[in-house]
Image 1 (tube, rainbow, N blue to C red):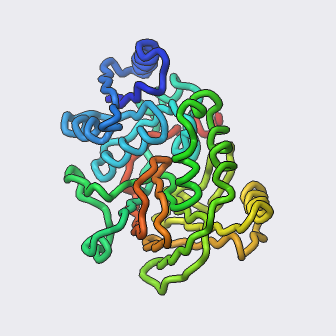
Image 2: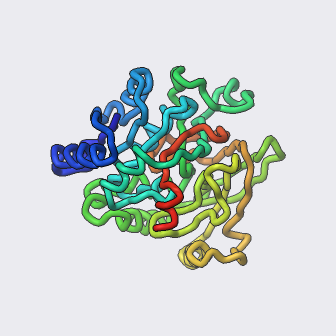
Amino acid sequence: MVVLNPTKFADLDDVRRQVVRAAGAAGVSRVVFVDSTEADPGFGQTRQAVAGGADVVCALGGDGTVRAVAQSLAGTGVPLGVLPGGTGNLLARNLDLPVDDLDDAVRIALTGSERRIDIGWLAVDPTSAQLAAEALTPAPGRPVPANLHAFAVMAGLGFDAAVMDDAPAGLKAAVGWAAYVVAGVRSLRGSRFEARIALDHGRPATRAARTVVVGNCGQLTGGVELFPDARPDDGILDVVTISPKGIAAWARVVADVLTRGDDADAAHVHRRTGSELVIEVDPSQRAQVDGDVLPEAARVRITVAPAALLVRVPGLGDRKAR
């Protein structure tokens, strides 16, 4: 089954033919396509594919399509095939999957090795039951509460969500990841907010922040490592609070991230790790999961589901070749 985002491609028939040809070359004779929609970006289509006995469900689109398919496959044992067609393609980049060769991506999705990775779950303004639960992970096949969202790469509050929300779709289609740079520049002068973060049920720490980012993976577009030590299969989430005040402080933060420096300005960049956290912010901030912008939240709770998702990745020979 291929969950296809039709808004990402100018010639859908040509894309479908290419996938079918590549699947045939990999020895797979039957490919079923189902389009995502504005009302359902892939959640329901993936659940139907699992119920129908699909051997692998492929996401052909951007990060939002991949996230929707991944959320619905988590805990099912059915592997995810990533066929990148978006701007960021962040999960593909973090798992060393092809981002500009659809034939190769299809081959790996159908014949590659299988790797188990973690999935993060974020609850927007969690209920008392969600705050008290050991983990937020829903049972496979059961309805997911409307305020609960999975992520395979990163989630965040504040500046990063604002950038995702403000990057125009038309500009992304025209110039790719540079659209996020444009949106980021527009948002640089925003105000800081108060972030109160409790990690692994510990005592909350309060900091002024422009953004709080929680990573399951570490790499951004362009090979930039926001979390150099992050691994998608270690059962741990990496957390960074970034709190620059003014353009000069932003420049120091960017320089630290780009150079992977160990001498980050502690007044502006604060890093921690854990498997569960609660973030309270004042005032409320926009949130995002893998680039999908969520409603504003005054509080979020995030937990990790270790090894919850099977992903088809390059085999040993592929990795050596790359």
